[in-house]
Amino acid sequence: MIPSITPGRGGEPVRKPRSRRVPERLWSPESGELAPWDTWRGLDAAQQPTYANDEHLLEVTAQLRRQPPLVFAGEVDDLRTWMGAAARGEAFVLMGGDCAETFAEATADHVRLKIQTLLQMAVVLTYGASLPVVKVGRIAGQYAKPRSSDMETRDGVTLPSYRGDAVNSFEFTPEAREPDPQRLLSLYNHAASTLNLIRAFTKGGYADLRQVHRWNQGFMSNPAYARYESLAEDIHRAIKFMGAAGVDFETLRDVDLFSSHEALLLEYESAMTRIDSRTGEPYNTSAHFLWAGERTREEEGAHIELLSRVRNPIGVKLGPSTTRDQMLSLIDRLNPDGEEGRLSFITRMGADRIREVLVPLLEAAREDGRPVTWMTDPMHGNTITSSTGYKTRRFETVMDEVRGFFEAHESAGTVPGGLHVELTGDDVTEVIGGSEHIDDESLHDRYETLVDPRLNHQQSLEMAFQVAQYLAKVSSSEE
Image 1 (cartoon, rainbow, N blue to C red):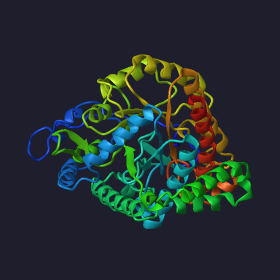
Image 2: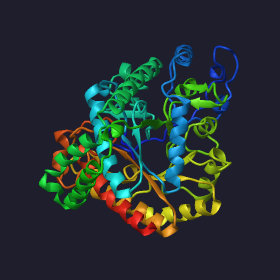
Image 3: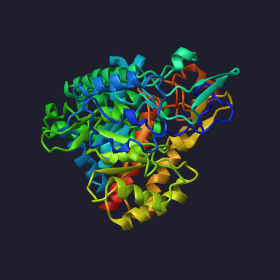
Image 4: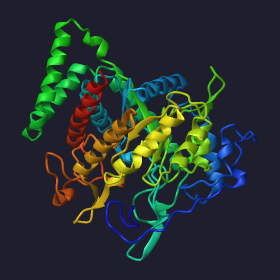
């Protein structure tokens, strides 16, 4: 449960946010006609900010509709194909990045370090799985977060909760916490600049396999990670063999890194949806991949309705209370025809529940027959409060949920398709545990998140080495 005081600290009980229906006069764009994907309007819309000036919101969304797309339909189609491959066990998805991006950290250094972390993880996972790894960042759009309470109270003062830089500011003042539609334009601009950086780094030689391998060798120089030395040496020999066999490493300098975020702010997502000139179908152009969270996945709610209308590959977070019927209803709503790569379920069950509750869902989906790409989010179901009052997670518990995810798929005879984690390329101290033994007292050293705790660079790579071992086991069992 997210506290109702400073994010990251313990606090008083919270009040459940209210859903609201969008006022009818906000239904239509300036043409006066309802867009084909705006059938969500009038439905219950959870986790939406309450703006003081609807006319200002209309002006901002009108400007957004005139902006160029951030991603293109052909790229979206490529990702959908890859997601289909992951569902069949022919690829593995790595989806990672900040819990909530901030405008202040949309810098070249921060973006570069996140990309570096994802690339390093991907090399390790590729070797372990003997499969292509589909790289997807929680990046260039993850500027809003759902909250457990509409309001936050500190020292007797109650103000709107911080909902991410796309909505309001973290500072605890009435002016900072007032939801501001103008921030949606800032969201667009920061996402555009971040995507430009991503394309420059991933297409300009920064992703060269040999360089990424050298970064991982630096990771292994730390004695704390000696238990992964055998796997690291195997990767080293494989790359040396590739060189000796005459592999042209110049062809391995570029990679595809797709973008994703939670489709939370409906006015923004609607304004960023475009009709593809090739097919005449609607694509959300704010990201390649979009998901609905545990708090916004109501089958008849506004978020699922909007996602049902766009051609992007989409995901839905499933918590431990998800029933078989709810899951099947989501398949009916989002992928009724069983298109490969269209729908992913991202499980966030908690390490103590996943082995119990996931297997029946996997079996029901297998019996249904329509393809699903299954990913694990081992972070959100394992949040605790440290003895020093910080919101945190324990690395060993996170990894236990990952193990449970693989064990559940082995039991059900289904395919573990991917990993979805909150991480940063910085050396923060937000998650306790791991081989470097971050403890409760260490959290204050570099606790920088404004919302949820993230794996740091070293913990992310340690996770990749452990998951590579699970993937190697899956690969060997299929031979």
